[in-house]
Amino acid sequence: VTYKGDGDSSADTYTLRNWSYQNLTADFTDSSDTLAPITSNTLTTSLAGYWNMDEASWTNDCSTGTVLDSSGSGNNGQSCPSSTGPTGGATGRINNGGSFDGSNDYVVTNTSGTALTSATISMWVKRSTGTGTKGILQWATALTSGNPFVLLRDVDGTLTWYVNSNYNVPGGILTDNVWTNITLVWNGTTYTAYKDGYVTGIYTGGVAFQANATKFWIG
Image (cartoon, rainbow, N blue to C red; front, side):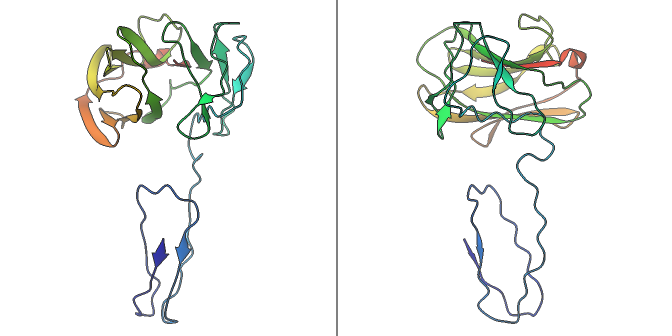
């Protein structure tokens, strides 16, 4: 990416959105422009959890935190069920990823959301062929909790977000064997769901069962 100054002797401001490159070049072709100091936040700023899932392997004993949290919060995940859960090292969108059997595989982390006033959940998923109801993630007190704070459900490829005690937010339709970015943004009042950057549903409501958001399940 190359930037060129406009020759007005003042520092120019550039805003780069939706970027995916780390190496950027500011190229000022005349001496009249100056480069003002740039303050940048790292990817881990204010994150409660950031799981690349690109480890070569996981210990699936449901007690060892080998699904590493890169946020700096220390919320490493445990692979479950013991001895039969996901072992990591599968082909991911970038490098390795986690492969879940769609039955009882999951990763659990001690990531609390009970005191949050806003939150964003974002992930890349690739659905294999198959039918039925599958859970993709859950923020609750127990895996079988009937009262989760947030839950993402896949029914025959159709996603729905469970918030405020019901399946209130449409999440879009997944295409089998295609990597898809799924995101939910909550600003304290409104929940907005996205699929590959496009809004799939908006819901304004409460935060029922937020007190139950003590652990985070993936898979």
